[in-house]
Image (cartoon, rainbow, N blue to C red; front, side, top):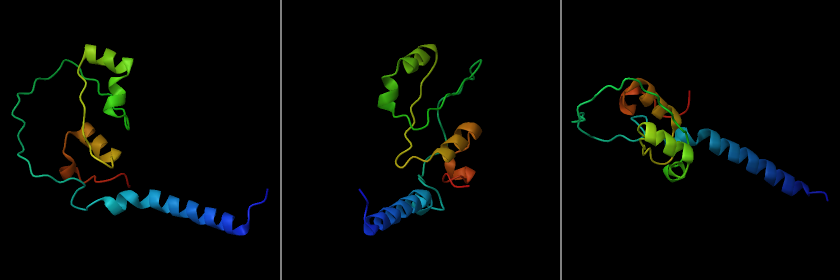
Length: 116
């Protein structure tokens, strides 16, 4: 069966539009002052204790409800600590990786989105 020219043209336009939307969505949604700026006190209030050793495992894109149903997560929780983070929607990975690797909050690092 041969598709008419209009159907092929419509499909091509749809593919180009989908690519453009996917390629530019973070830049269109991000605020230059920060994706999620909040005014909070800069104090934790809990005394920090250093562990003898630390291993950080990040599962990018894994929802908490799905992770809690995994046997591997349950095994890791028995041997250490599992922490959940709430990053909001849409989630943007690179600013969170910057926070994890540097310890500096997103609003101070300058990293706001996944763009270069």
